[in-house]
Image (cartoon, rainbow, N blue to C red; front, top):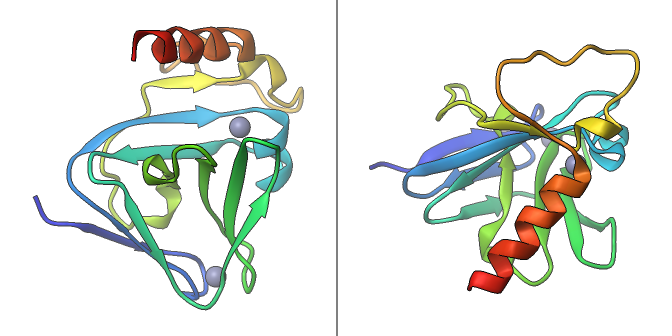
Length: 141
Ligand SMILES: [Zn+2]
Ligand SMILES: [Zn+2]
């Protein structure tokens, strides 16, 4: 499978997604909302991870466990990654001309803005559900 290339609005950041698309979630948490000016962050994952390049790329430490990549020239949202798992960075699906796949869930839906009604296209999960699932996965590893 060939790598999938994407870029931010101005081209100051390019991304290369490696290998198979595995999954994606739309995150409606307060931090994603604020960073994206209101909407969700469409976080895609790939089997081989994602490479980030370009002069615009900046990583902002948004919490004590994760950071957010964005383009400092045009402001595009690029990535969210956990400090402990940088090789499993998510990448914004909006950066690609062709969608590699569909989202499988909407997460942190309890924090979504009251100004929008979320589509019932895929299962919804609250923040507490997402954290509980993540903790269970960690215990099984
Ligand atoms: Zn840019
Ligand atoms: Zn979020």
